[in-house]
Length: 75
Length: 260
Ligand SMILES: Cc1ncc(C[n+]2csc(CCOP(=O)(O)OP(=O)(O)O)c2C)c(N)n1
Ligand code: SF4
Ligand code: SF4
Ligand code: SF4
Ligand SMILES: [Mg+2]
Image (cartoon, rainbow over all chains, first blue to last red):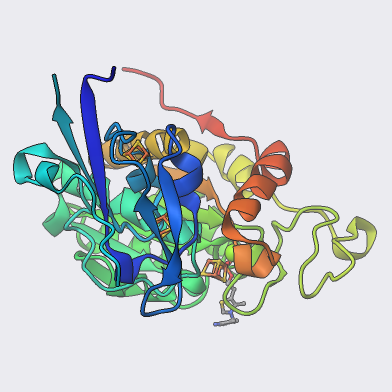
């Protein structure tokens, strides 16, 4: 099991639904919402609370800089 | 709106590993979803934060989609007329040589209307850092062909693809300035995936360090997408870029200073 666990916080109203983060996530734990934000874009969210390692890949490729990443040692 | 935050208990300051740099403000950027301009801005801003030079750097904004970039950076910036950022950057740096100066330009700006300013600033070896966002097209004005448009690439003014006998050859500006004695560091990078973002960030840092040592012009091309102009979805545009742009505009360093 992984020794670290991570999570992301997406600024939903600023997300433009480009999906660049989805392709950048090594554990494929980002999905796009079905409902849309105030601008009409689907937004990115973490689909598996145990799958994120907090690697920050998604955040560093996000063109709009809307992802914040947290990481914690576990076990 | 549904609550999408998970692992709420982890969200505390001691666990924070990445957040948007304070060198960018909170304005929503006007770029199309997935446009590389936003990523390029953020990387430059992150390096400014890491080097702690926010109050010592002045940026020169271009004409093109990034014409409003001064609305997003918490640093002093000056707008230049189309293509003239290297000339304005020259003036700013000569008047304030203790400041860091960077220019930021698209390919229509730097490699078409501004070709003369680009070449002469690099040839004079102005001690500035130039960022060149090459998306192979005039993004802002509606996707017209640029000097950088690839052979066969469709644009609004080459709807059947760029035909070389009719429209001329695509221009490799970065190879051109690498030959000039005034440039100290010339490199071509990209920002479409995590590993390239990390490499580009290192290149930005190096360029500004060379500027600090007065080593001459540092020049960083970032091959980027214009998904709107290319008429593709963002991820599709990045894949197209990897397959079609990178073979003609290969990534990597073209010129690095000799270690002293
Ligand atoms: C003197 C002058 N000529 C032409 C224009 C029209 N114009 C605005 S942006 C642009 C090209 C922008 O292309 P590029 O530099 O590649 O930027 P991008 O939008 O692709 O990032 C042109 C020709 C102008 N604003 N000023
Ligand atoms: S931090 Fe890494 S593992 Fe977590 S969602 Fe982002 S890319 Fe995926
Ligand atoms: S990369 Fe950023 S803007 Fe694009 S979908 Fe992901 S969070 Fe949203
Ligand atoms: S038109 Fe092209 S370069 Fe301009 S913001 Fe949209 S994707 Fe980016
Ligand atoms: Mg362009």
